[in-house]
Amino acid sequence: MYGGGVLAWTLSLLLSSVWGDGSARQTVVLLVLLAAFLVLLLWSTWCLWEATARRPATGTAGAAAAGAPAERS
Image (cartoon, rainbow, N blue to C red):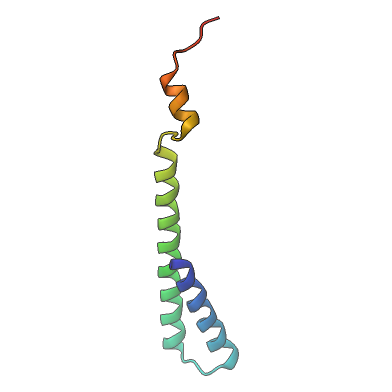
């Protein structure tokens, strides 16, 4: 969702600057919206990264390793 917002505001900003129809106020608003969506995109990516890093290993390999006694040599 945030990636789509970044793309949309970037395209709006580029089209506004290329065609020259936008005012300075419109350019500032588009830059603020772009920055906000970029911050939200980075924040949500970081949260997902942290959530997956803290999750213990699951699945058949993880369950088999957890249930099996440790081998001693």
